[in-house]
Length: 247
Image 1 (tube, rainbow, N blue to C red):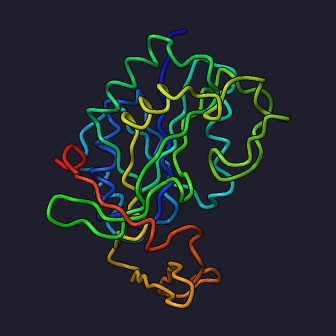
Image 2 (image 1 turned 90 degrees about the horizontal axis):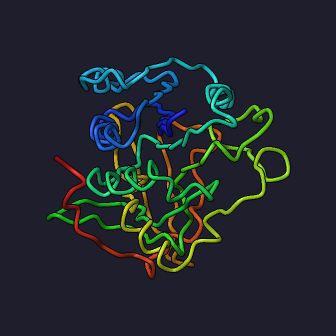
């Protein structure tokens, strides 16, 4: 069975960037499962405007019951690429990684992780945000040939452990320096976490000046409508060119 790359996007109210985000991974993936969790903005319309038979749109009620869409890939020659509605990749760079994956150059790895920028502003050809690292990683790229057993009932690609689901294999912690540099070139991501991404929710960000930590709040209020974002501080703020990320 030939190697394939399966994209999986769990989304809710992501109308502003979702068209570009999916188009940017279209040539990297053989199939893209788009799990729509009750979006009430124009997200579905934006996805429908992409003319591709690779996209499979699925309505889901409970995001914590979406690993089931990946169960059939366990133990097969499939890579699974988790992309959220706020994660923007460079399609030209992904093209280089796809070639290496299909050639088997990353077969020994069950999990690959890369760097990015948690973006709060895009202006004058640059993205401004918080560097990862030291901020948290968010990318998800897994080699399901190394997986086994029943995946946990959880949000897609969450909850997998080496004890229960992954055979002994290399992960991002085993990357050589050259491999890390190559992977960061291929997969450096704009994480648009602090950008306004929908017309139906107002997004605000602010700095707590006492300890220089970034907090984020959303409206309408939810049980987790205000929470601290770990390691996002002014001292970690950077900017990068956005050439290649947008049409």
